[in-house]
Length: 121
Image 1: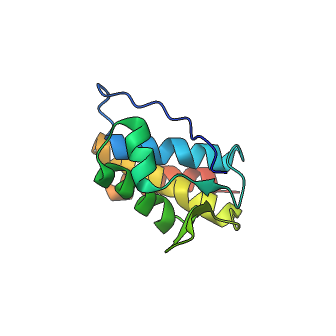
Image 2 (image 1 turned 120 degrees about the vertical axis):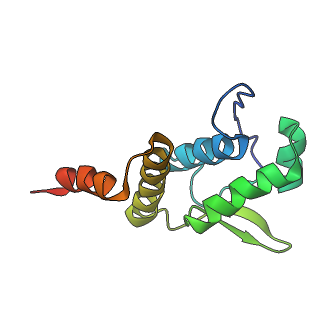
């Protein structure tokens, strides 16, 4: 049985809808509310559940897959990746940081300097 995925979409938010889906699913995966191996709804089913376009949900799933958080196999569906390693979570956090820096108009070198200051011993 495929679990019901609980997402809250804020239509008035400045955050794109696909990003709201991606970030909420990524958070649920990180917190293991959606543990490794959990089968996710199909793109069409989730789009219908949320009343959204199929392409919007597909965009979010592609982003999660490129971050290594989910795997999609034809005729087998989409599941939470079994290797939710710290590396995959770090990649996801780095992506979020980069998107935020870009939205704020922070120059690349300044963003790198900020993150580097937290990596100093």
